[in-house]
Amino acid sequence: MMNDDSRLPGTLPLDHGLFGRLRRDVAEDWARYLHHPFLKALGRGTLPMEGFRRYLIQDYLYLIHYARGYALSGYKSERLDEIRAASRALTAILDVELPLHIAYCQGWGLTESEMAATPEDLRMLAYTRFFLERGLSGDKLDLEVALAPCIAGYAEIGALLRADPETVMAGNPYAPWIESYSSEAFQAAAAQAILAIDRLGAERGAVARYPSLLTTFRAATRLEAEFWGIGWPKEQV
Image (tube, rainbow, N blue to C red; front, side, top):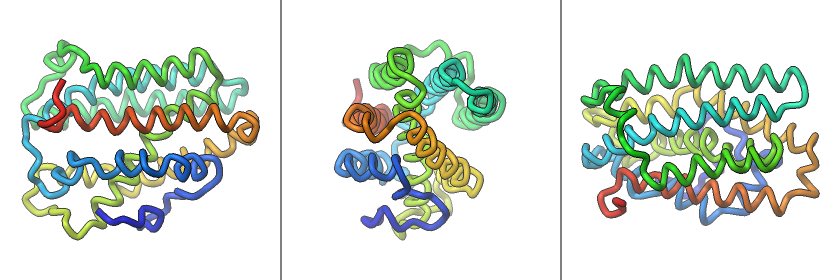
């Protein structure tokens, strides 16, 4: 992948506001998240298919908890516009993202009942319970910062993979995954999420709370990086 992650095609405001500051201050952890061997192999089409299936199953389980995170975000909201925004995100996960993921997994020979019956990998469990705990014990800003590495990171990864000259699209079984996260629609959604975090931070005193928010963001970024290990042969648990 490219090394200059701040100069990507598209419209991701990676250096903007609160998110940009958090991303800069966890630069080493962010780089490990973006450049995990799982992703390099995925881009080249050399990732073992069994590893990708393990990842897909755990990602299905993750999305259920991700939806719970946005339900909690609605509860933690204090204004009607915030509740509506959380509701739209929750509906998008339940009615769009999850059905698309289930349909995609069917192409890999995975049924929803099979995925639902699979035990949670400890890395998936640690990550999802972490962001739910931050939302339960903190406020909406704590929760949104804990969730931020997911949508923002996947968008940046998608853009990086598409721009990487070593990425192979023709004949690559993982090309649809790359296309999904590098798509204009996903990039735009991630850009809006980044800007929303900055607005929320301005309203909820992010400057005074920055050390705590940074600790949350760093932990979430590290947990995202660990998640790739689910599908990487050398990091099975």
